[in-house]
Image 1 (cartoon, rainbow, N blue to C red):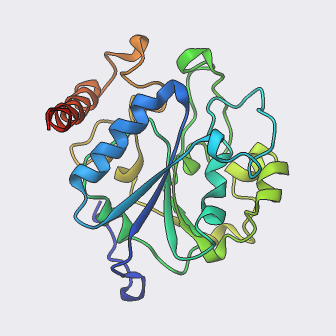
Image 2 (image 1 turned 90 degrees about the vertical axis):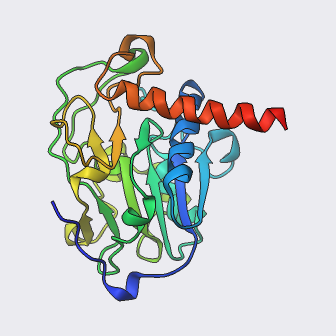
Length: 242
C-alpha cells in the first residue's frame, strides 16, 4: 500500500513529539522501542515515557480490573501534556520501529483530530502476557498508535480521562464524529502473530506478548526485537567505556 502524501500545510520542521506508554514490567520494551526510533529517525525526535509516578495529581483514577497495563488510560493525556498544541504521537511500548518515524510524522492531516490504523482485530485468547486479561471490543488496538492533532482533542481533559469509561476512551466517543478519525496504513501498527507477515512492516507491535517475556521468546519477529536490544546494549557498553 503506497502511503498518501501529506498535505503541504501539515509539513513542518518542528520536533517530532512521541509519548510512549510505560509499565515497570515492560521497562526493557520501552527502552528498546525508544532506541529503535532514535536510531532510524532522520529528524529530531523527543520521547517521553508516560510513567504513572510522573503523572500523580493528573491521572487519579483507580486501576480497573480489566486494565492490562499502566498506560491503558494515561495515553489519552497526550494532548493535555502537549498543551493542546501541534501534533504528537502516542504508541504502546511493546513495539519496535523498523522505519524512519519521520515518514509516519509526514502523514499528519489537519482535517482529522486523530489518526490510527483501523484494525479489525478480534483476539483469539482471553489472557495475554503475565496473566493479564485480554479484552475484546470494537476498535481494538486502534488506540495503540495514535497521531493526535492536539488542538482538536481538547475534550481529553484530565477530568474527562479520569472519569470516562474505558470504552468511551478507546472507542473515541470523545470525538463529535467518527469522520474525525483518519486512517493510517497498516504497516504503522503491524500486529505480530495476528497480521500476516509483511516485509514492509514499519512498526512491529507485540500485542499478545513480547520476546522479553519467557513464554513469548519464540514469537514472530522475536529475532528483530533481540537484534535491536543488542544494538542498544552495544551503544551502552561503548558509552560506559568512555
